[in-house]
Length: 253
Image 1: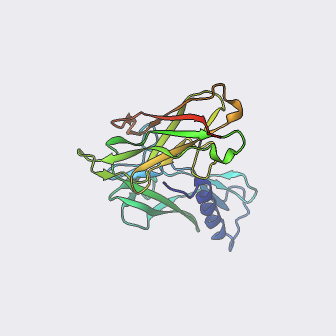
Image 2 (image 1 turned 90 degrees about the vertical axis):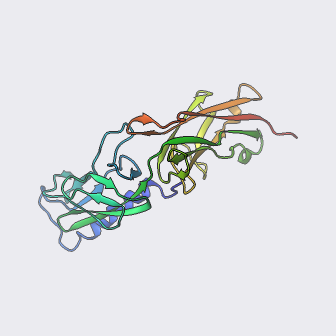
Image 3 (image 1 turned 180 degrees about the horizontal axis):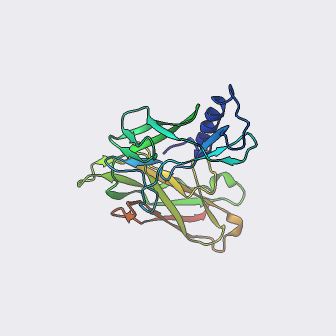
C-alpha cells in the first residue's frame, strides 16, 4: 500500500513548478507563473494499456495553471516526457501508456520554463480478486478507545490465468454496507477516517481497518459488513465485489 498521501505528492509538484519560475516572474494576466498537476485518474497505468479512470475511460494527465495574481491562466503550450522506462507518454496530449511493470516511474510536465514531476505506478492487469483477511473479530472497550480499531481486513489482486502474480499499486475501493451512520468508520493504518480506497502493496494486498464508535452501538454484539471492489476498463475484476465481515463483542473484564 502506498503510504505517501496524494495531497503531499501534489504539494511537492506545486513547489517544484513554482521554484523553477522564480528567476523570471511573468506579470501579465495571461502568463503562467505556476501550475499544479491535477489528481491522476488512477494511481497506476496497466501494462499494455493507457491510463484510465475508475469507469474505464482513457484520461490524460492534466494541469491547472495560475498567473501572478493567483487566477487560472491558459498555458500556451504543455509538453510531457518520460524519465523512466516502463512508461510512454504522448508529448502533446498527456496520454500515458504502460510498457513494463514498475512500482514507480517518473514523468515530467513542462510549461514554458516551469516543470514538475509526476510519479505513477505501472501495474500488471488485475484478473482476480482473492480473499486476504475477509473475516475477523474485535473485542471493544467502553473505557479504552485505543482497542476499538480492528485488524486490517482486505483482499488481494492477482494477475494471470492461474492468478500467480501480485498486482502492485492498483486501486481497490471499500464501501460500508452495515451498520449505517457513524457507528463504524473505515480508517487507514494510522487511523485516519475518510479513506475509502487503498492501493495494493507489493503483495497485491489492499485493506482498510474499521473503527467502532462504541457510544453509538445499539447492540452489544453484532457485525460490520464492508464491500471491497476493483474494476478494469469499467468491468469488475473476477471475484469482485468481495464481502468483508468484522464481528464485534465487548472485551472481557
